[in-house]
Amino acid sequence: MTYDDLSSAPLDGSDVAVLHDLRETVDRLDPSPAGLTDRIKFALTVRALQAEVAELTRAPTALTRGDDAQDEPDQAMTVTFSTDSVSIMITVSPLGDGTARVDGWLTCEVPEVELARPDGRRDRVEVQDGRFAFAAVSTGPAYLVVHPLGDRTVLTPTFTI
Image (tube, helix red, strand yellow):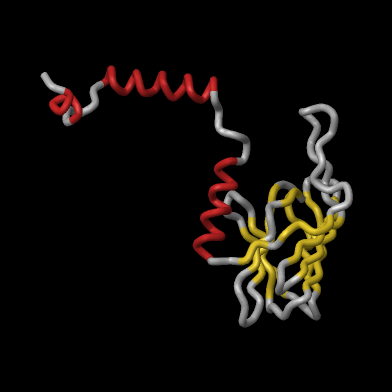
């Protein structure tokens, strides 16, 4: 039997068992970095939208990690993102029950702002005079999506609420 004959044969139970063992070994010895799938989804979303990604421009004590690797990251209190066309500032106020209030300000004309989660959940609120607020959103990773009138969509990097 030649290699070409083997390559066209269907997989049997022993092939599936070998592939399963190989996957477990790779996962144990060289696991994917934490958050990799979320970063890939974000990159694909940006590419699909042909959006402009805002840069984190100011975040005093935001998104830092404690001494113990098991510590949770510090929550960002005030964060500013900017692009050539828009600046976005948000303030996160923990409410103590696993939720937080997110207040924000924009420098562009938009009817609404979207708070999106890597798992697909989305919340939208109206913008009035450049100001918006999400009254009580669950804590965890999120990013903002802004659709400026007559300009490209703007996405912020993922931040922790």
